Image 1 (cartoon, one colour):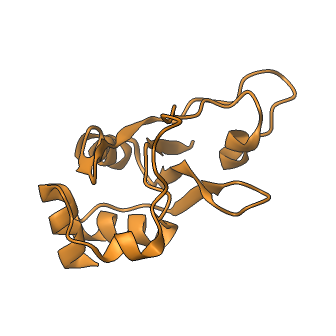
Image 2 (image 1 turned 45 degrees about the vertical axis):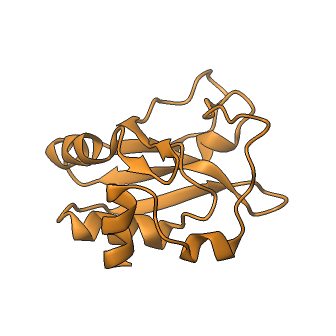
Length: 133
């Protein structure tokens, strides 16, 4: 049985390694982390899937990261939904399908460059993450 967490509203600079470090800092366990990327540009789409080994671990990840502040946004964490439709792909690849649920982004949101990542974090959560990273 799969215990997969959808982790959304991530800044585009977040990598699977970042998420793994956040989980380790919180003594949480994940079997796998996959940040979903645009196939053409390889830029993050702003969400990831975290596979937990147990239902309890999945719930712990959701409790810790749902609505956690990071930069100027609140993260979203909830159980991943199965793919819709009989022809939908299985597993984390579902997010690449056109029917996948995607976090809405404001069109006027400015993209952050890699240099912005080194600036002082704006929230307590980001400050704590900066200490671990």
